[in-house]
Length: 134
Image (cartoon, rainbow, N blue to C red; front, side):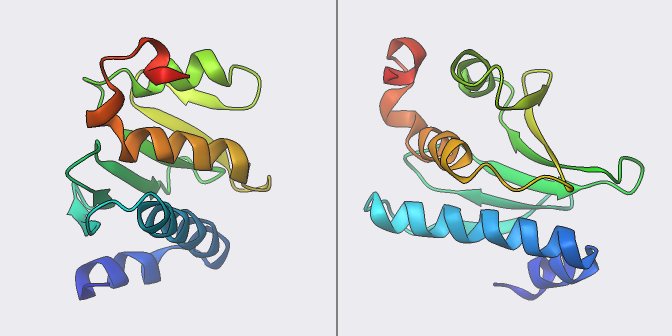
């Protein structure tokens, strides 16, 4: 983890740090399991960002002005969030066509988030399929 990204993670409250590190770990493990090229980790717009050539970037963050939630952001010019909304209308909360909204007081829905992250990491390969092949 490069220092700027580490500094950002260290800035988060302890519980948010733990939740976001868990998402980060999921991204890295999924990329390895899916045999994707190396994940590029950086800060984009001050938020930890993860990308692979076969996918669409994933960013994550927590905002002090909305302290009860943390967010997974996706490119709003993709069909990712619309697909997630179709697949998981009762399991997830969304912000427009750009983010999954997660509650810091609820456990991370690992299976659902893992599926969403997989779709984002492989987006370039599946973007032409209805509902991204789901």
